[in-house]
Image (tube, rainbow, N blue to C red):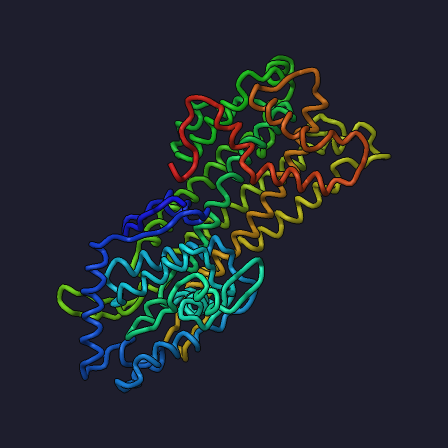
Length: 515
């Protein structure tokens, strides 16, 4: 197992990708431990004093004015975790929960939360032995932190919750004991520090960002294959066009299309004598549309990386002067708005793909046989495969409605504006699945289109794509049960095979946000 040291405030996207993928052991250094202990000492002094301090010796939310007696301070933190463990719905994936554990540990290790080092040790110990707290996915509004999901995570750490094992749930205490991890006992403020924060919404958003990387790269490959299948022009990818606009994502995407189409005999065959003046937007505006999506995803990555390194609980503890200050870093508006931008980007990649499928099956536009079948009428070809793509694209349009513009007041109007970041992030994965399947249908359709242009050959890279498709799915000469082919093509989209073909192209910048 590879060892990865958590660098409080200095995590990079490669670190987060490694945690998401699993198979790393997390550590933290002695210097951070000293800072954490200095912060915890401030809280110990506050707990022993007579002044009311939110999160230490008061109630929570609307009950912040209720003073708690010294004898009940530990029970206060325990009750907080129990009362806030009210999530519902399907559990979060192990990859997302691994990120939650790591992000919470990294945030606390900054030394502004007033927790003991043992809290961070327990978070990392649970991660490192491979235990995954069972965390229901619904129940957070993304302000006052991701309270319910983080409470479920914490409930497992103290041995009262559950762990996610082999698709089911089992009592946490027995699994902690078997793994040799001591259940966490909470001291003053520690329960609040563990459940205040944006780590669930941030983990969900980062997971979606990483999940979409191969899908976006596949979209470029598939879009280029469709250009050749439709005998489109490579003129719209001329670098001079994109330099004049100056949008960086557009420039990068156009460069990939030029490289993917370079050397195509299909393109060369119709440079002369083709009476079409311009291609449909779904072909020639791919750099503008997909490039804009890429720019939004790059911006979201910067926001999420900043959030992953942030301190987002409340109140915050400043050991240098002993101050404990209440604020609102738990409000996940930056994450919510980044996720809304990601949702639009994901939806648009699928939307333009659906339009390319519609173009391919329309003989009047593509000049290919109707519905990509040699015997239309007896065969329906890709007619209803396109209907599936249209259904998925329409579903994504509804899911792309911004979540951050919604707010419902909670806690008796004390928490009167919330971000809805957790749903904003949670809806991204189903949107990615929809876009993946739209692209899978386009991949099959464009490969079928290339078949009708034989013996002409596409470029070397796109011929490799066509051969890959044909290894997994035969040409649709006559109607057959096509759903399994769509599933196999979807695996090509997410599995990285198309990305590997993309990587064979020379002299291209790294496209994705992890560069």
